[in-house]
Length: 237
Image 1 (cartoon, one colour):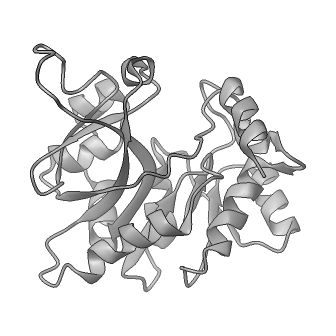
Image 2 (image 1 turned 180 degrees about the horizontal axis):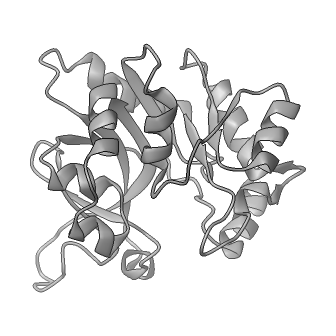
């Protein structure tokens, strides 16, 4: 499922911006389909413009029935009556998604025989302090089994002792949910930490859900700003 909201606070209509001849949302949709990993790929949108452009290329799109606070809420509405076990949320501004990273996320559930993991997501190591300090970059810290402890727009861990070697990880906007966890997300109200940080993954932590993080070294480019779009154009092959 690819949630696709037309408006965006930092970069309005970013999903319809041109990326080497096609809108960003089309590039993301095609990249997801081309992995060959999914039974079905759908774009879930509040926009007639995005719905029409995906339908126009022969893709599958659904219209959201209502406004939503997050992409996970939008997807939950779409899959509520679907007979599915695992739902992958690929953000519409992630045209550089790759098969290797998505395969790692899916494998989490294949190896979870006790069905203790509620969702899985991706993280990539970052070393540039400017990126670490950038509030547009969501960071994640994990325990010794790679379960998420917290997500933040602030640098975490804080470098109080610079002699201690600690890794910094960027959270990539790709989630894999058990359907029951996604339905819980839709039902449970937003709490203060999520509201403060504006990071939807925090809601799962606040309600005690288990998030397994998977490390990937494929960073790609998430298109959050016009500058990101220019970088994406230069990187696209």
